[in-house]
Amino acid sequence: MTGELDDATREAMNAPRCGVPDRKVPELEKSDDINPTESVTSVPDGSEDPDDSQDVTTAPHPMPASERIWRELMKNKKRDRPQLSHNQEPKGAFSKPKIKWRLLGEGYSVWLSIEQQRSILMRAFRIWSEVVPLSFEEDVTSPAHLIDIKLGFGTGRHLGCSQLFDGMGREFAHAWRLGDIHFDDDEHFVPPNSDQGISLLKVAVHEIGHVLGLSHMNQMTSVMQPNYIPANSRMELDRADRRAIQRIYGQCTGRFSTVFDWVHQDRSSPGTWVFQTYFFRRSWYWMYENRSNRTRYRDPRVLSHGWRGLPDSDIDAYVHIWTRDMDRTLFFKGTQYWRYDNENDRAFVRDPEGYVYPRLISEGFPGISGPIDTAFYDRKERNIYFFRGRNITAFSVDNHKVVPGYPKAIIDVFPASADGDHPQSDLDAVYYSFTHQSIFFFKDIYVWRMVGGQQDSVPHNALLPRVPISEQWSDICDVHPSMLSTPRR
Image (cartoon, one colour):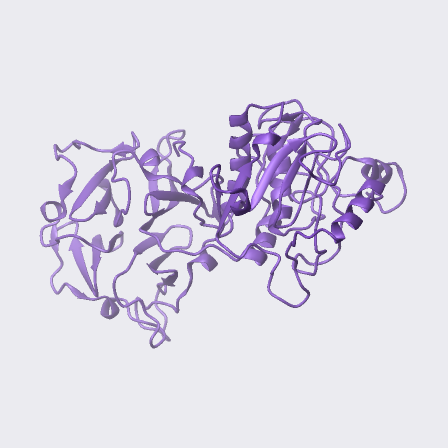
């Protein structure tokens, strides 16, 4: 659009779009007591992949008379809806971490099966849960007053709502901040990947954004852009969407069982080595896309489905012994360890040397007894460093024995660069990052980075002051267990 009343501007103004008025104010500024209706609208198209990102466009339009009347009625409505205020933290946000939702039994769509509707809505909630510390749980049994978000489909006068739907072609849905979502079932709603009709996933993600407290954004790639534009190939949150919702709810934090770069040969290009960064927490894992500085879409996933043959949860350490004549990937838990077959993407039961797994750590690494806290392999020194409590023990891969002089205190081998700022003991993970070319030490929700190279101002191998993990790696969020996906990585 040019800002002039030319053909392009007229076309944008007449495009189907959301019914919520656009506001040129920050997301956390004051909103109406009821921030009603979000309606997304458009012409059918489709083409949307399970891992999609969204495009939409913005243009103002006159407020329909029915909406003006509805707003007046709602001013006197007894039901209280929270709001945001000018100079406060976002009080128009949910104040609890677990949000319950329900698809109303009297509000099913005629276009999709009940299971399709529930599955699509679950996925829409999950998309938001992957970037903020909110857990969305479908609840079909609790009393209605305990359900935070009720969703339903209807036509015309519907579900006891005072705002009528307008039939096919303009308003697809409406929603209330911290409230309910209604979909106009005169529209032909379809599942993801359909090349016909209106994508229920796109509309639901947009509407949930309003319920969570977001207004429209004048960015083409944002899911909160007011117009529905069907021609795209992805349905995921844009960076602007992520940062806007995190200004309201904050970023995800938490500790990890282990963190590592999985280095392996690229099957599509023999002789080429590639790596992916993985974060393990309990029985879940995330793959981190370093170039985009975010986790892979639709993570976390179930550990047992992505890493076959390993323990189902609470992996203590990952070690990749990588020399000119040795390439071994090992996982440790408790007093045992497993060797991983990178080529077949599963743990060995019996490796090429005839060893049966799992093995006792003390059998494979004389002088080391489990359990350990964590471990990592130093390619330059060709030592595995095992951490336990306050101590560290170096094990020589070449000599197959503990390096003389060990164990030592962790703080003596990796001193603090600033007094009093050191993990000291009981580490969660230590790993060498190929992306950052550095070693990181994890404990609780913090990470320390080891100084690289020789620097006169700090001791050798010193740890720089801690930072929150969420500042170094973004959007590593739990989701409700019912939403965990199971595909192979």
